[in-house]
Structure formats: C-alpha cells, structure tokens
Image: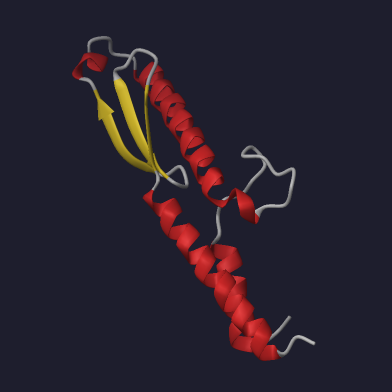
Length: 123
C-alpha cells in the first residue's frame, strides 16, 4: 500500500521533472522571416515575441496595414515552430494521440497542483 510519504516523494520527482521541462521550454527560440525576407521575428517557447527586426526597405512603400499583417503572419509562423519544438521536449508527458496541434504546453498549472498536493497531502 502506498503511504503518504511514498506519494509525496513521487510528487516531488514529478515536480522536479516538470520544472526541468519548463526550464527547457524557456530556452526555446524560434526565428523566421517574412515571405519577402524584410521582417524577422524570434519568439520564445510559448510563442512570446522576443525580437522583431524590420529591414529599412519595409518603409519604402508606406502600407501600415500590410506591414502589420506581414508581422502578424511571421510571428504566428515562428510561434508554430516554437510550439513544435516545445511539444518535442514534453511529448512523453501527454497521453497517446495528443498532437502538437492539440497540446497545451503550459506546465504552470500542473506544477501548481503538485505544489498544492505536496503541501497539503491531498490526493
């Protein structure tokens, strides 16, 4: 029969593994360019914009709507790359059949729940 101490030790091992996965996710950087190569974006492991570079030539044709759309499209492509890389890191945590398109890679809620269980000893 599993004791509270056994359960707590298991939670602690799981929490350490999840924190390591979070660290690896935080290190992800995905960079891509727009179709015309005038826009370059880098995003982090959760799709957050880390760097945006605009070639000065984007200003030769003043089209703020087009520029905004191109930036948005490029950021989305970089975020997809980061998501795929992140999924590869933590894929073994998901049940069979989960794909990069259906996976939520945010581990914070899981770690929070483990912290709660460790502190309170609840199942």
